[in-house]
Length: 108
Image (cartoon, rainbow, N blue to C red):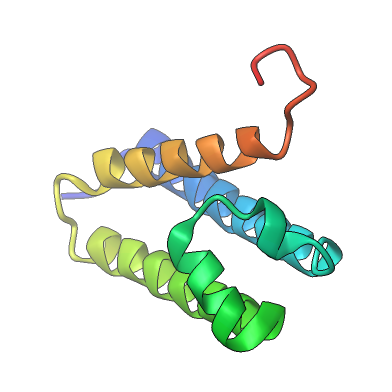
């Protein structure tokens, strides 16, 4: 059974959105390295920052993002019927991450 073009395009756009927000999040970690420990909200990220600094955090983020994006592709390739809802949930989480970087916009 072939996939519908809409679901293929939807998956691809959401996958790219997740990757783009992850890249921006990593960029901001490097850019804000001097004071990141003071403003980081994630307790796991703060723990990593205390142990190995921004370079370890960036490495962990890269590994985690690669694993998630790879898992999403694997779920899609296995033609799992929940692949679109799963990627929608991950994209929604990334949207909330993006909103944390935009406090001066109407939704922030």
